[in-house]
Length: 595
Image (cartoon, rainbow, N blue to C red):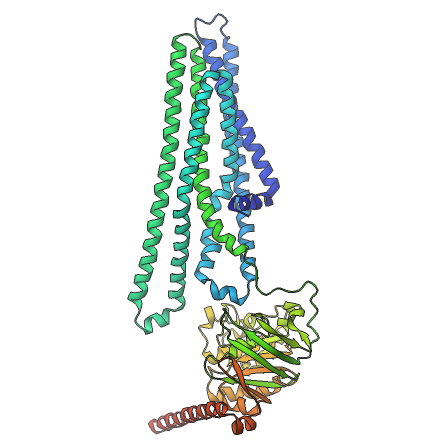
């Protein structure tokens, strides 16, 4: 669907308001189109040389009628504009809603390829740019066309010989408009694109404020912003230039119409072909033609601007999610949690990140996934909830391909705590119940106790109603991770995915969480990506990965004895943990001496 089609699609969603708008616009145009003919009759009727002059009573009636028509036209047009504004705001509401839902249905791969700043710009600034088109553009386009056609018909009825000149000039005007509109498209599109880049730069600098200051990169980021800001300015100036050209073309055509009308009409008055009243009526219609021409100028400018914005919005609306649920998908509510990876291959691009992954996990058991940096550990577990789909092979839960399950139900059965914790600027209770909005406060407290965060929450002035700030900035790393664990647990998943979920906590906090986890992992299939030795040793099965392949599967004892890579990783982690513990003992000893 092109931009014009989108304008009509969303405008027609408010069909009753649109119908009322058009009715009032037609009535307003019809009332105004009669005024010049009445003026002609009045002027010709009061001329002294007229053989049948109109009486004073008739004159007063005609003047009152003309004033009434003018007032009626103004009031009716005003009401029409009110309904047009209603149509415009509703159209934008529907468009904004559809764009948000289109973003919401996308899969992880879409966000891997699309800048967040560009998406923000498309759902805010780009849609806001379409407001003039939705607000008055469609109705003004129709109104200006109606007035133009009516005025041309009226002139051709009055003076057929002059009407042809008007038609030729108006045709030239529309040809020039479409040529200029074509030239305007590129700078408008570039203007929207550079605004999206500008938004991305601002967003990155706000979210990465700490990193920018740590590396003293303010000047570099300032220059980056200045370049994007200047590019936006340059393209905006180009759009203004073409707007000015377009408006001046309109003014020139209108001036030519006025000059031509006065010249030809005046000459006809002099030679007695028409009366002075007819010339004044002709001047009135020429002035009336100026309004739709100027209105159409605005419509074209608004449409070109909206076209650039809608093209970008349309990219979002037409982007289909890569993860599709089958029409005959089955329920996942009663899964047990037996999992099997069968010769799975996966790559974000054409290059495979995971190669020939094959292993199985019994329901209720826990699996530690260990490997070198970039070996594909996090990618592997992201396939289980279908955040991405496999390229080859298949993943089965209870001997059923995960693609056969209802997507939402499948994900409801998988509790995930990722490396990068994101918390919302809401209360702690709302963050914990995020995946289960109907959860009671008792459910929230139970999950918090299981994640060992309840006691900390109780120390806060507002307890579970404490607003934690954007991205949970008022909490420590360990506190955020325990809230994230509680958020995963409240949905009572059959499968747990813990992606290095205790990486940001100290040894003592980790021990407390681990005690809770031992109980929590009972009767749940659990996947744990971790560098904690205690977790690795206690795992029922360890999967060792290197360069996207599984290079070892077994228990700690078996792998330590027979798998060189596992032994190397384990000893590296052991040495690292021993140094950390030694450092902690020294720091505690110094503190005791100082005291």
